[in-house]
Length: 299
Image 1: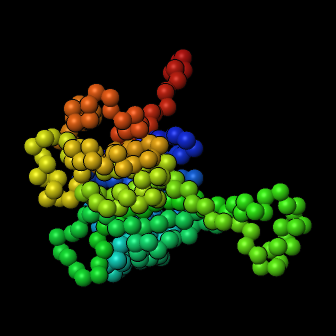
Image 2: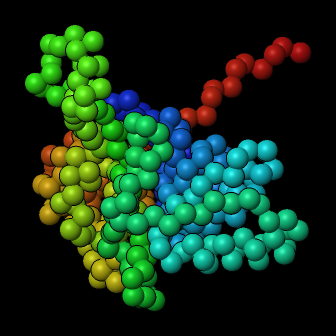
Image 3: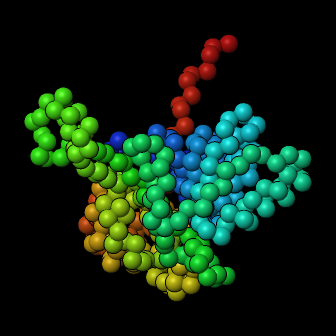
């Protein structure tokens, strides 16, 4: 049975997902038609056309074959999965091997995502990959094993010197080849995947996104070494990280079963003081409520 689905709504951002370290992580933005990581490919992920895979660990990537298979089964377009360099070949091989078991290889689009190279999804929306600090045990030259992603709204605003001009005047300038607009980027949602602290927190499209999805796996004071060994965040890291961030909201993800939500909140207060940053909360605090059942009909 899958994890309970969390549903988060704030400042015009609608997010569905679940995250539990070692078991499953997927985060879906339905209105943006994209997902970060695939988990076991629940129906929330199957509904979107673009999946951005942060890295290849099983709890984040297990559902890749099922994602493509189920979209073929329901007569939908294959969809596209964007992956770090070095994972495209193994994933394509996985689909070929699975076809030997299933009897049919689904249509699949697997595209390499590279740090700093924007992926255009719509005229007004791009996703920008960036490298995070979660290397695999097997290091290869030129291979990026883990990525974060920032979904960025792109706007084009009229240059100040052209404000007040009439429509025909602006059209005339445009026909003359005169620049009339400037590009403005508004980071919406940033997902850091699994990572230890790194320089990427200095990137504007990370620290200024309206919503930051930030992994924090370890909370017990005795687990700092484990966090460092696995390239994960420990709650103590938030002391140094939070002052750099300008995000409106920050959702902590990837909590493990060794720490309950109540225990995690207590550790958070101990590390950050009683006045915990009001931007902070845990993704799985927003578990979607099941619709209430009505009264049973009279016999």
